[in-house]
Length: 160
Image (cartoon, rainbow, N blue to C red):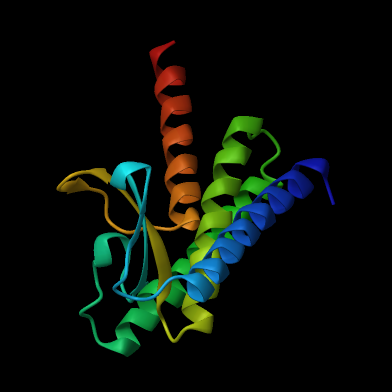
């Protein structure tokens, strides 16, 4: 196995592992419907089970369709990204890292879907007063961070 592939796999495993660990803490320590606030309410921990994608998009779809969209299709997509970022010979380290974050976060949520009948565990919420984020998890942070890093890298590249 190449060093690049090892880097991607270890980074992805760390993301998925940290995500799964924090979700296990949320399952053990948080009661559904009972948010716990910190830092004057800026950070709120609240246990949620999300059947859909980001912002619960697709949660109203029939269960069998959600399985095909959020488990099978997303799983195939993640294996495709993993393959590219592991074996593409000229991919920059930053792009490999971005891909590893996306894959690690994606697999963290995919593990949930397989374990919990199509649901993903979310537990973090940030905001001030009525302006708050949706409830999310560390896998979501990894996916969005990887996508943002990839976007910034390619915007900078295009600007030069």
